[in-house]
Length: 224
Image (cartoon, rainbow, N blue to C red; front, side):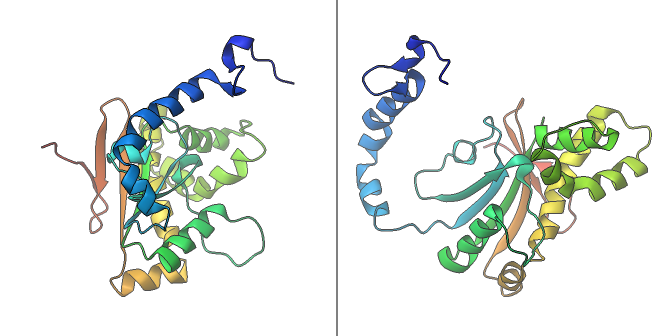
């Protein structure tokens, strides 16, 4: 049953007013400026970079990287997690997007991007105390269980805030490690066809923190 008030819905289109207003802005501004690009993209896409990011509404990759239509191939899920390679039947949304990006689109850059104040990471930490975190969220963030438990064991006196910050970084590393279990990913990297990186976005500072692929350390990306 729709419980929204009539003011929330445009009676002409039956669309929520905020979405309709946004669409009108898109048509009047971005689409009008880039109409030729959209005509070209109708023939196909050839992005060079895939971003595996979090579904959090505050960390849109296209906004962070000022990317135009067709420039980024993005898959977003809770906590920007990548499951390990597996051949069991089921619904593998992230794995399917990854396979398409590598084997069909031929992307050359693969980036796992987590972020600060990540609810998925917080859920993984809460789960160690057997707190309920949802029918579907729980099994998904359980991908971090081993990483979380090692982190907590190594830092018994750490505050919840420090554990959150540390696990956000470890989650990126976990996804990078899982990516390497996919044969088509490890092969593409070994052959030099794909570069893989990790990153974090600080919401409060609006800053990107990039992972050094050699040391695994994260450092802030300098501004111009």
